Length: 237
Image (cartoon, rainbow, N blue to C red; front, side, top):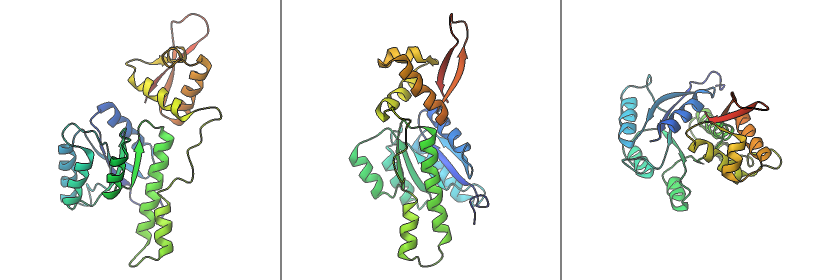
């Protein structure tokens, strides 16, 4: 079955930060072949939505969970354990700022298929979910007993062939710092303002901001009322 003909992958977004949750939900909406099944701000709401989904298939089925680890009522790992112990048949992708190796190892043990560290660009998000969709399609094409080659090919789809390429001269660490600074700002920021905050050259700050606009993570708009040359301001999507 082709990706176009396959049923959409229905996704539950779990994150306690409303703006982040909505941003991730909007990312899902922008991806062909995926749709948002729901958004939950804590573990209790997530389990309710998952159980309601399982009670009314196939209309409300949830196929994939995007799971933040830091929830107000339960750790993401414990929520994943409860999902597994409840017999809920969903795949889980961790989307979190947690970098603790012990958490990553426990995630693997719980069958979390991908681990995506915040912050990230829309391009990275899209790549990971497309990898997941390839993994899911590979499993659906295999009936009965799988060969070793089929198993290897299916699991290989989860792995990125190489690191996401940045424009020449851009640093992943600085990119992360720029994303974090824009997200933390209550108002839109200009390249000049960001340059001061991060101690960067203005032209360097603008390169990173424009890269993030092209990646779909930031929005750019003219800033009116400033003297001299027209200036742009940037904000998180």
